[in-house]
Amino acid sequence: MSRAGSWVAVCRVADIPRLGARRVDRSAFEPGPEVAVFRADDDTVFALVDRCPHKGGPLSQGIVFGRSVACPLHNWTISLEDGLARAPDVGCAARFRVKLDGDLVLLDADELRTVGVAAAAAEA
Ligand code: FES
Image (cartoon, rainbow, N blue to C red):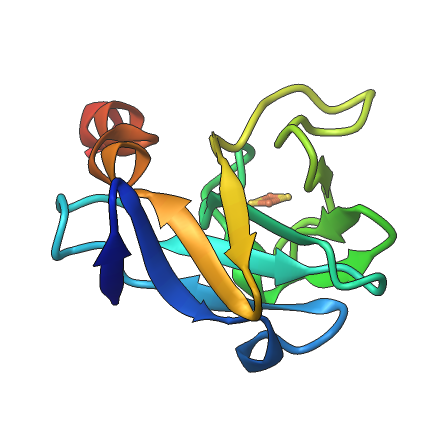
């Protein structure tokens, strides 16, 4: 990871399979659930905590379609745009802001230190 201001380059868009995901280890910032960085078919990049709001399944291993991901454990559909589970399921995977600098995918360092960390600690 390289840092530019409060934004941190975590990978390149090309490192993420189209309609797939890549896990980002954020242990350099704060112990907490890893981050799943997704690439939609139009190359839009999204980032969510890599824990399904149902029972913690690894969203990075799910099936990406449109702007959603299907959790690999019990097939809940989670929106990549806001992390919300699609009704009738209820829950939310914490979302990270994403910025692109050319082909570089940047995440906010403050969010890497905080987003989803308290919830994961409460579950432990
Ligand atoms: S853990 Fe994701 S649907 Fe159950």
